[in-house]
Image (cartoon, rainbow, N blue to C red; front, top):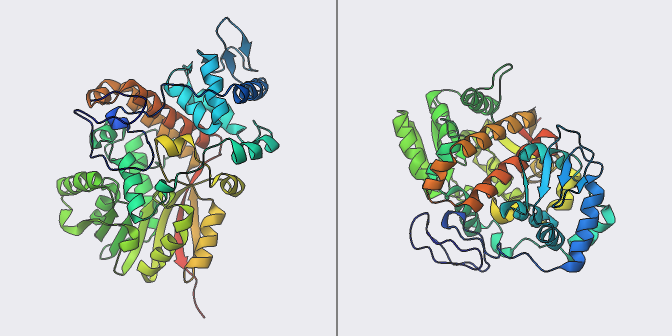
Length: 435
């Protein structure tokens, strides 16, 4: 495949999943294309400010930062994570140009390294809101940081493109680091167990219970994944209609459903949630709302309400973040948006409750369960498996830049769940009784 860092290249072989015209340059990891990544931005004034802020921030963190020549910063002891700044100038220029993107990009290109990525990122995540003074945060949002591209708004067509950029990377890639259930969401570990398969099965049963799924029901799933939840619902005796906008996922999900012997009870539709029709005894949606976008939350919750029969329940699993942080960050364009989940936004519990109150006919949160620390453990499993099987991932056509990108993505998320900056919640949504 083509290996190009600057500009958009046309792939010559391998890895391509069908490129589409775009109005702005975006990374194409499965084609080895990383627009603009090879060359650090030139921003000397911003770099000096970034260096001053970084040095001041890490002095009190339980980490050890080592510069070329031996200079050391940080409040960490001998067993604390070590961050080695290999190319200080490039690192601070990337950080100064846009801290929310540059920090991750500098890891992707090797400007800094560490032997314990989630361990290093955890103390940063714990103090994320205080590392930079509030006044400078506001100034940065206004003048320095990139805004989310309009091309990544989650319209029907925009959602398909955003999902294509992540979930259609390669079914084989995901199969190498996920467990046998092919669940790409938080597991729910039983006390004393570290078995990821059992944790994922427990999670699936947990959300099906939240929706009250039983034999004889017709269940709608919004967001098929690779068919694990639909399989389990069918094994309970339910009939399932499941929606996906990823052709790659639809193909593999149907094969897995057939292998499990439940294909006659599950229909996989290549369809957006906004195009869904019918009336269902239960609706389930696991970690799909994060791809909806703030402007479409009313439409999403109205769809849940419209598609649910009277007396039915919704099982909703969502990553969440504190409401104040969500409000501050909802228009930001971050490293995660650029490289992993274009168009994504994580809601708060308050935002979910507010949208239920405003845009449904009485749906409310009747029960909830937090699995935040379980997600940290799940991500740890994925990262370990990904690195252990890197040779097989590389054989699929992915390059070293992708390896560092995916490792940073998994470690960055693990750190967020470790410290509670992120949570994941299972909700049972029910209609309030009318009197």
